[in-house]
Image 1 (cartoon, one colour):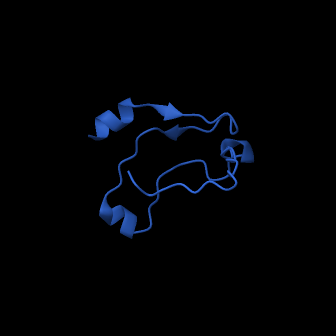
Image 2 (cartoon, rainbow, N blue to C red):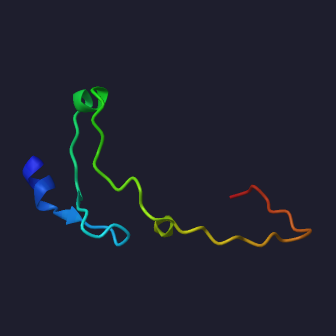
Length: 67
């Protein structure tokens, strides 16, 4: 399993050039309970997350709950 995770390679975010993060990481419950965390870009630029488009509210139309 670890060999397959290593074979997945690394990810280099556009906002943080030169920083590489493993694409697949395997942590045991023991490691998590000891405080280990997956390695990922924690300080990425705000452009990493896009806002969802707003939906326009339809006036006077109530949608039913029937499937």
